[in-house]
Length: 475
Ligand SMILES: Nc1ncnc2c1ncn2[C@@H]1O[C@H](COP(=O)(O)OP(=O)(O)OP(=O)(O)O)[C@@H](O)[C@H]1O
Ligand SMILES: [Mg+2]
Ligand SMILES: [Zn+2]
Image (cartoon, rainbow, N blue to C red; front, side, top):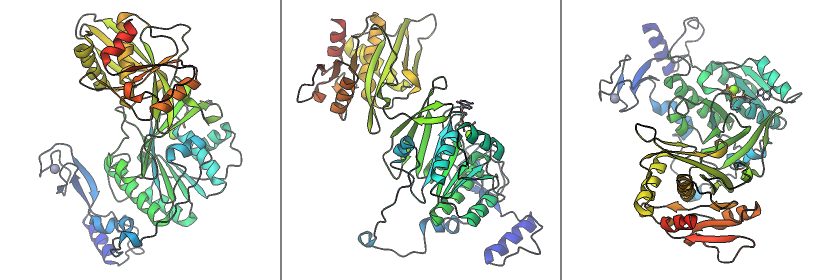
């Protein structure tokens, strides 16, 4: 270890020790840094010696951060007035998959780094192979596979009918070999499948550990910015649904995309969680077929189940996902509790928000659910993040409790406040129009979203308070 340290030191001075000493694997000096307080220790310990928190020490390179990140920030450049900096119009690189371009905010950006996360087997490799092949026709594309062999990728390409695919493969997990290959072949687009399989010689931690993931991602990001290469990382998702490895991964990259969807249905959603080059929360919708992922251009009716008659506990909400309205059926089941604590379960909706809505329903609507289990579900594996679903969730709960169905072909949207008021949501008109287009003829909406002109064949019910919405359903 001491020898390695010495070699590293002279490397830092500019003496290249390669050659005579090259047979000794020089490992740069590493330290253990606390993820809580940033304190450092020379050896791993269970408890941080500085702040006393447990299990926060992570292996890091001992090199000062300033030299390691120089290239990203360009620390050597001088201070310039913002007004004198000419913004370069970034030419977007279209991926050939329209829905993928949509979530990316119009395509890939040279030098941009994208992280694509998602559950195992949801279709990450499929999507990137399809996009890579389409891109490869015009831009040199390198697909680095650390999880599957080149033969497995070839097999997938064959299944997806991607013949004579103009894409280059590299089955490699060592970071230094990958950066060397990028240097040698100068690709414009690099796919890393996946970041958790990579490791750098510089750290002794295992691949997939926080230290390795962070270091490999940081180095590749630096390379992307230096060379103007697009780098796309595949990231695994932990059981809790976060991208495995450090949260910092999400901060390092420019764009974070998540694959969502019910594994039992063929629909797959790609959502932009963060995007430095476009709107966040944009949604791309795909269907998984034998021939790979196919974009769904008009997804608004995908998340409705077909009931011949009105069913108690079902309400359809018009939500807005990115730039498109989406109609989603929300289902609720309210059932007397069978001994023990009443349960509240939300699938595809926020469970905390459900608790809040039940409290508002009790306090302002006079509807008691404390003796009941309450389950709510957004149909089709979609996740609804916006509070515009509040009114639909509340009415679905009430409908199930009273076993009274909402009128067929009705849609609902509106946010509910703690005082029991129904608040307007953004772009109400668009939501109503989408519903009308799909044959919905009753809309229940916040008073402040009332359209100025009447809409053909649509009955509009406006409510100011939760009591009014309940009265509408009751009567
Ligand atoms: N022969 C086939 N016909 C139809 N669909 C298939 C076939 N083989 C695989 N698939 C689909 O492709 C999916 C696997 O996709 P892919 O390998 O791209 O996922 P991934 O997200 O990269 O998974 P991992 O995290 O394991 O790498 C399967 O879940 C299945 O839906
Ligand atoms: Mg894969
Ligand atoms: Zn600490």
